[in-house]
Structures are given as structure tokens and as C-alpha cells.
Image (cartoon, rainbow, N blue to C red; front, side, top):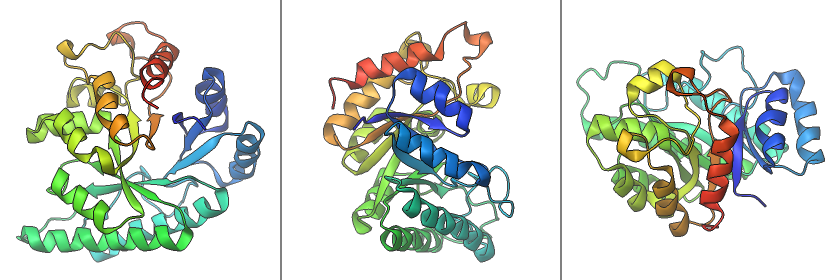
Length: 283
């Protein structure tokens, strides 16, 4: 079974990013309900391994974008909204045969904290982690939590504490978002990855030089022209730090197919081949 796959959010996308690149794994996200039966057939036909980035099925009652999470919010109703979305996703994941589900946590509160201290905010986040672990156990599908945005809990100590306490939870290390976090919060990206590596279940791979790149271009496909000395994440180093310490982790290319023209004319498929070469000796 391949450890390398591509993020996929539409049926035609599956052909272009997974099958045409000779990959055997996909991470599926936000499909129309009418497409799920066809998606399942195509996964079976091509013997693909599958994970889910919550939600798998578009939910008209959930705010846009559907990756928005309220799991660290002071507002209890907002937390319950996110938990309901995750639980629906977990039910689908069990029937879908997903290997794991990625959920954004910890995240930035969208509601003012109104003077609450760290211990009170941690209790809120911990309660959400407890619910995620319950859903994972009930539906027999692991959850990989992915930190997103400024949060007092996007730390090695808190994440290791959560994953050690709840064995069905692992961490999803997102190279692009963690690079932005390291610049914002002043920590060493590669040391963070090394210390967290035994508890990492999957790696999302895309690139940027700063949050300005993210705002301008979104998830930039990785490519061998991206040199660390020019400010890009050292993708090879990240993988060498994480994978040998946790050879069971999955690597998911999480970007679109278009390389931003202002940054040069490059083919995203060259980046896929590059990551294949980087990961081949590690697994």
C-alpha cells in the first residue's frame, strides 16, 4: 500500500492528481452527496487507499468554508456545530472504509475569550479532544488533528499530551501552515517536527515562503525549484525528520494543479515525482 497520495475534491480531480501521477492513495474532501456512490466505485476499481479531510460530504447547514472549525471556541453552540459535522463525517468514514479522518484542531477561537485564562481555554479544547476521541472509538476510524491558525495550543507539549492521552488521535503535520506558524510564533519548524514525529499520523505537503504567499496563491504545489535559502520549506528535510521516526505516517500532497504563474512556469507533476523520489528511501 502506497504511503503517498493526493488531496482530491472532485471526480475529475481524481483522474488528474491521483491516477495520472501513478498514485495509489487519495485524501477526499467536500464531495457533493450525489457523487459519493461513484467515488466509492472508482476507489474500489483502482484499489486506492483512502482517507478523508472532514467533511467528506458537503453539508448545506455548515458554514463556508467547510474546513472552518470551532472546536476551541468559547461559544458552546459553535463547538457543537463543529462536533456535529465531525460526527456526521465519522459515520460516513466508517461506511466508506476510510483509513483515517483529518479534523482541524487546535484552532483559533472565533469568539472573544472575554478574559478567560489559559487553564479555562485549555479545558474547552481538551473537552473537544475528548469528543473527537469518542467519535474515533465509536466509529473505529482514527482521527488526525491538524492545527490551523494562531492558537495557544499549537505547541509540541499540548499536542503530545493530547495524542498520548487519546490513543486513537494522531497529529497531521501540515508543512505550509506549520511554516507560517513558525514564522508567526518564533519556533524552529524542523525541531517542532522532530519532537512531534512519533505522534504524527500524516503529513500534508504544500509550500510557501510566508503568509503573504498563502494569501496571494493559497496552497502552492511543491516543486524542486523551491530552495530553502529562498525562504521555502525544506520539504526533503521535513520528510527525513518525520518519516524515519514514524514509518507508518502517510504523505498527502495538498494543493491544486496550477503553479502560480508569477512564481514561474512549472508543472505540478514534476513536484509529485520529486516527492516520490524523496519518500522512496524513507519507507
